[in-house]
Image 1 (spheres, rainbow, N blue to C red):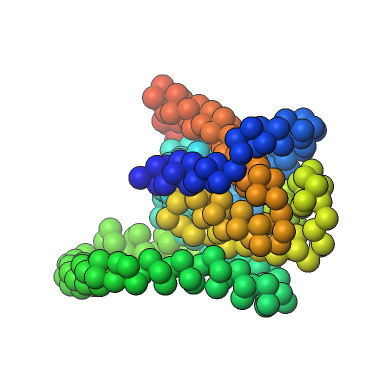
Image 2 (image 1 turned 60 degrees about the horizontal axis):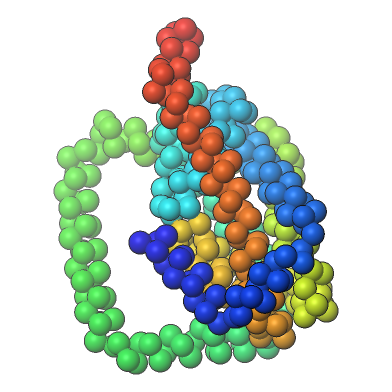
Length: 328
């Protein structure tokens, strides 16, 4: 379903532009730009794997850097079709390769994501609030008014869906209450303990400076990968530094919406609208919002898919099991 949404939004963006001009714009871009973005993306994910490994070490485990990278890239591949399922996938991969309990590694993943969310809110919030008038115009024109119109036309459907969700939540809480009473010891308590060990790993880091240095580097690379393209197209190259920061902030917020494949649908919609609001040519805005996530998606499919396939191949051969028995 999420992949279908992404395809529909790709089609929606293309329907508003001249396909011939879009291809012309894409053809004008030197290959060095594509190579640079792939290089920046590789550095970013290498840094992410090292940072995650630091949390795992502080939780009492020492996975190899190679298998940590393998697990991390496998997660990004899975996330392209199944949002957030990749987070479970990378924990499962490490459980096979380095015998890190899934619940503990999942706790470190949650801790890592919490750090990124806080950084995103601080960075993006500061940027957007410093340009409040522009933010207000953007929200009213492209978010509030369209949502209000859609809700007005479909209010009964929203009320019905809300009631169903509320009933589902109540039933789940009642089930969970009964389940917890029966299983509060044993397996469930082990899961909770593992999650807490992973979550608290951030407070037990021996090299705090290294963890935060990697975090700063990752976010700097995110900005570089946005800024780097702005001198490619004429109508966008004239953007001021503050306008580029605004696009960067909108892109960050759009990627944080969890119910989307590879973070593409919301990014394509919101960033293209923000570019047009700032005066970008429609065709050049479409080219930009397709290029940046397009290259990264290709990277995840090729590199992440390769890592995931390599993991499955060795797992089917019993490679990890054999190494575990040797270690024992």
